[in-house]
Length: 622
Ligand SMILES: NC(=O)C1=CN([C@@H]2O[C@H](COP(=O)(O)OP(=O)(O)OC[C@H]3O[C@@H](n4cnc5c(N)ncnc54)[C@H](OP(=O)(O)O)[C@@H]3O)[C@@H](O)[C@H]2O)C=CC1
Ligand SMILES: O=C1O[C@H](COP(=O)(O)O)[C@@H](O)[C@H](O)[C@H]1O
Image (cartoon, rainbow, N blue to C red; front, side, top):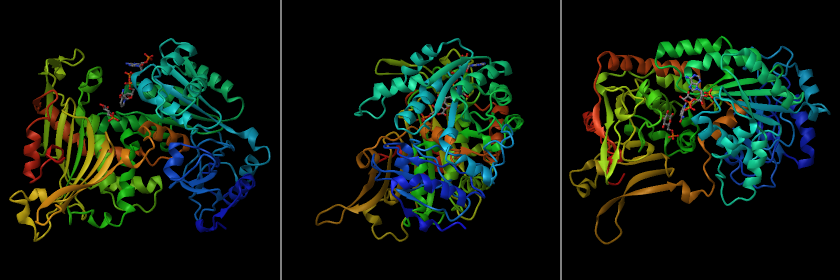
């Protein structure tokens, strides 16, 4: 009988191994179990869980979610849905066991580790468990590309550096380009940084990491080439239990080819196989549904990890914590107190180098339909039943399905034009040789969206996203209503907007959460001032914030799906934007031109003004 969570018993380190067997046998009936003892001195995973962790502290993690850490203790979950969880620095082998919710993967042999009987669980964790220590092989498909170099390899290195990768892991780059292992290592080494500076042995760690990186050249549609990769993976896995993660860092038109070849020729025969799919997931409802159908020919939904890296950003992750763990916010989180919500993304550079890709998508598909809409869904969802991935994703889907259709009159589009500033000439969007002359693709868009439910009825959710703007920033701004019968309104003159509270969640750069409040200026008079209650991360926390890709890669390795997009979420997101995108294209709506480095088209201000709103980021005290 499962004991309640509160029955966690502190245990000395030496007893942990036997406790693992005990805990596992208690759970033989269910729950995806991945068990390990963690010592992840500075890992992002542990840091998320154990605020006061120390290098010498041993922790046993419990999840599926939350990643509860009971340092130096073994806790027995109160529900079969709880897992004994994965951790950084696997001192004891991780034993993944299938969950009743997670159907055996198509490519996993029956009788493989996924789907074992309870007797078999015990066999796995028996005295010779170290022989069954699993391996994780991570194949970066498209390893020669921009994203792989810029984000994926550096994130993998950071995880390695932080002792968050399992003991037995191998990284393979796969692409058509011809490269030796040494050449891959040289390429990768150029983009690795010791993110966590002021630490020693970074170069040593880098060298160790690079020795675990290999390269296999092959065609994307070739089952034979993937079979060769499979052989190489097996050599590295050395007969251990094999878990395989494929990261599709390639253009979307070859996703299905790769999934087909990889699933047929290189999927794990006795462990899990998971595939991280990069955006774009189609360009409208039809193409997205076709992509999903294509992927599902070869994979189960729970093997597909659709990445939206904004969900891996620290402050986006913190959104739910801010709201659901602070009594002061949740009661205010509705139309009753909130006047409007703004979701703002701006970049101070253009599409240079990615014009070919971008022109086929535009800013609405590139940023709004995914990153900003995901943030909106997280912001507006009802309290989920639990922190389990499915409970959270189900709440997000409800928000997306409750959204009113997007009207053309509630949308403004723009495109940047060349501009000379300080003697420097900045190119216009269509100056890029990879962009067709006369392209109408928007590089800027602003939209007013509405959620047709009891909580948010009538509250405008204003989105704004643009490239080649004045600043680089992403933020969520919550503007509250006026104080009824405000006693102090005279102190603010006619500009009552100055008297309203605003909560700003600055996702990047300079991560911060601040609340604009009214305050008396100290002194004998009665003068009011607007001031910020400011949680600036750099001042409050000494720890570096991990890159979103680190968090998401770690989650995919751990099988945590909470921050990945489920297919019904994706369908709902496309359902909202597809009619608008079609209308813009069919009517050939011309974008309003704005100078490179400006604050975007004036139309965005008129749009906000239609709802009696001012964009918070343009205020003098932004
Ligand atoms: N770069 C970024 O900042 C971001 C990228 N993404 C997405 O991530 C994925 C990868 O992006 P990125 O690295 O920029 O892409 P790249 O264009 O750099 O492509 C990655 C690799 O795929 C292969 N490739 C490129 N074009 C083709 C083609 N037409 N047919 C077959 N293979 C091709 C190339 O490898 P080889 O020739 O060696 O086989 C290339 O190195 C894409 O889906 C992109 O949309 C998402 C967010 C941000
Ligand atoms: O997905 C994308 O995101 C980047 C911005 O990501 P960030 O983490 O640097 O803010 C954007 O530049 C790119 O166009 C888009 O495809």
